[in-house]
Image (cartoon, rainbow, N blue to C red):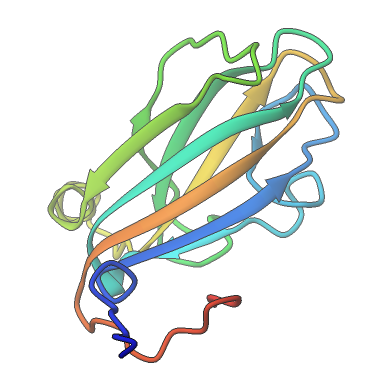
Length: 155
């Protein structure tokens, strides 16, 4: 008898994206050099995290990862620094940079700044314009646990 479980998938949102900055300058994580940034809607989760793993290293790889809370999904309105990795040397395909945060931290930032903050975007700095990697967002403690997830597609 087959048993269908959704213990982990209903409690975590996990989504990976290809990040191709096209520049050594700091860029919001996106597939197109920061033009279409990804964000995690924190109104849906009590905690969140981001992991970044280099996939192409031409120079010294990723050197800095920062998380910003903002009012809009593009990370443009009221962008407020949430967390920083500080200087890192992500220059191996085995390296991973990880940041995590809570909804409470975002609420405290919002209160201090007197603005509404809801989304988290990730900004990455690389040593070389041709460096690339994979960004994974993790949403934990969901307000509304998910059900009926596809085995192949998570949106």
